[in-house]
Length: 192
Image 1 (cartoon, helix red, strand yellow):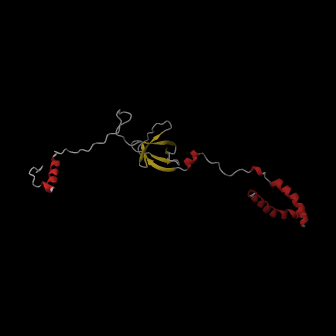
Image 2 (tube, one colour; image 1 turned 90 degrees about the horizontal axis):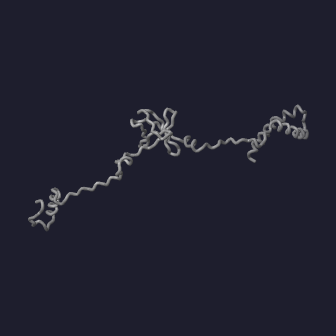
Image 3 (cartoon, one colour; image 1 turned 180 degrees about the vertical axis):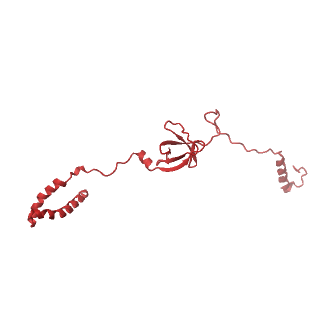
């Protein structure tokens, strides 16, 4: 197994450096004597330094939950609260909402940190202490859905077309009639 290769190589390096030192006090000078000594020495060495194979713990971290990943990959922006207790971000206005769903009112000019999370949800942090959810303020509407009974879209205004007997229409019509070659002899040209 490739995982145990490192252990074998470390063991060989350790034995190569330690064995000559261990063979000298034992008085071993032949290869046969070294082989006999090696059997007993490996048992002592394993008893002293060996670790059970199953106690290896993984060095990989557990994947954090999605909420934590969402905030780790967030982008931070600094904004200033305006006179309407709102923040302008990406050409839109947002109000700060607390955990109960109520709007938070801060002083004009208060510096806040806008947090754009990885999933594009927006939060606001004040004084590195309290975090609020940002709620987009809709564009202004002509009528209120809450207070106006006839809350329908206004009908488009009809373009005004003046009647034929209107002053400037008579003169334009007269110019048109005079430009026609077959009406030059007419005495009753309108607007003449």
